[in-house]
Length: 463
Image (cartoon, rainbow, N blue to C red; front, side, top):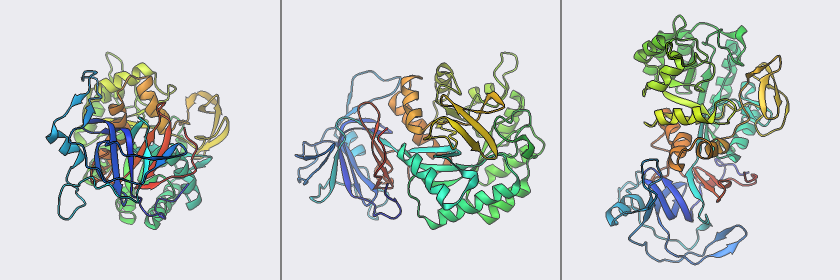
């Protein structure tokens, strides 16, 4: 696999794809990238190509763009027929002004002779996935952060379509969390990331409820502490992007206010909160819920609990582990029906066993046993301990098992997490002027090509 930050951002074009954009799916579409930035999205123009293996390399012609595009409306409320947009609508998609351009002129599809071409063969072309809740993979855990550990985890998840990632910690002693922050900060500063780009840290704990520890070590749980956050922020400004806590704990509301004042996501998780306590936390700035339905008070018709508050509150973005183990497909579908305002986020919660088979692993300092693909604490087979899920598997689950459209599944996997992280101007969707975090899928929704910031990843096994 190549190193995105070591390689030169590529210039290339992808043709004959079903390109998923915020406006809809561009059928028989072309996407052009110059120096790692998306320059054009529009309809194909019948270029002649020479086949090389599964893909094609083209000696480009100079034909002009067709004036019309076919765009399918891929959402639950649209009809099955494609929508024929007029020339003006096509210009919005194909020749959208490039924010990166100093002149602001519309980008024209000037097809160069020396640019590599990839034939999507009618497959989906998607924005890269963004995983904001992931603990590790390929036998490595973010709690053991080092350059080698971070390289291993990010390489693996990049091979599964993740182009941006939050290094997620566990409830642990202060010194262990300090170590992760120091190592991730140094890693990001160095900039030499071989796969998924680490864009920050998600602190899952240690300010959680001892009544709902899940696979977190209850011996390390402490009360919410603003001083710790101030010290971490002073040492590593902007590094912490999300913090998971139990909003009912003493001092939690003060921490939530501090987090939101510093543009950090305040997430409810591993919590014994009542519905009323969650709503009070929302008033203080709570805006997120981790692995919805798991490790929180459940929905009951007389006690809505944390789950009820999450379901009924648009201001709360809801994470979902779409693996069929943590949440029943019907519950995933229900959550998706209630979260249609860019507030549904696909996560993996993957631990070190991701990418590997059954066996004994670690999640932080907690031993985990994986049997038949299910990760649990060994002394209590009923306590789930993260997952072996990948983002491409979760994306397919949302479509095939929970009934989401391709466009909505893409939003949950890419656009919505980008919005929550404040990165949507740079990534999270396929739009002119954004960095080229691009996936090409085949007809069975298997990964065929992966580009991170315009650099093609090589050597991964198609999934």
